[in-house]
Amino acid sequence: MPRMLRDIVENAVRLEPDMELVESTEDRNLSMNIKTGRVDVAIVANRNQGREHAQLLLENHQLTLLILTGDGREAHFLQLHETPVAEVSPPGLMAGIRAVAGGGILARAGPESRS
Image (cartoon, rainbow, N blue to C red; front, side, top):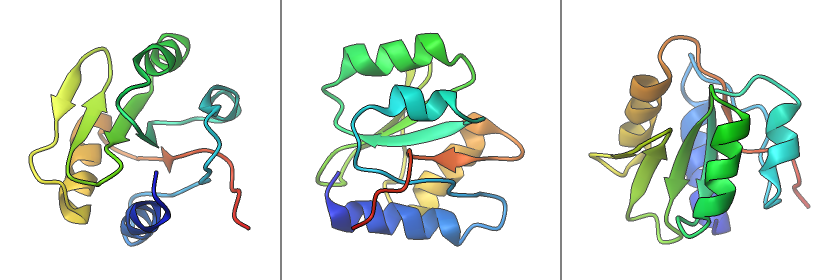
């Protein structure tokens, strides 16, 4: 995910009082990171990693993936099905997370890896 898009999404999550961004990473291996804690939503880029995304969902039944395209123009929630996001903006993405994850939300993108 491009750094600017990542920063926008991270800031949008941090501004929501009912959400917590636990960790953020550019690491592509999210499977181990997700298994280490309770995760409701993992925010990832690149819709072309279908097999990896499917494996994450099979291993983590409670998980919802929010998949953003690199240009930030499209986003989809992926559970056992894909749900288009009506409005691709920080408020639209946060509303979508609430809709798919329900109550107390823990948004997570992986371990912190800032340099």
